[in-house]
Amino acid sequence: MTPRPDPRVEAQWLRKLERATTAHEKARRALDEVIADARTAGVPLMTIAKHTPYSREWARRIADRVDADRTEPEPPG
Image (cartoon, rainbow, N blue to C red; front, top):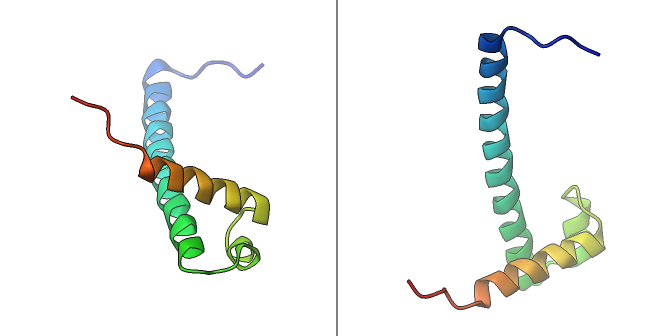
């Protein structure tokens, strides 16, 4: 097992991990929205799949989820 680093070193790495995770989540949401928009514009799912890290089926699922999220009414309040 790897020994635990000094708490200050660990804290630095945890901050880096948190920043990278936040950036990844934002980029993934942006990619998901572009996938949905491309499908809406008529780009074939096979073509979308060739230009993303997803299979045709995953691209379809992503586009379906984004479209469903966009059509849900905002909760009150």
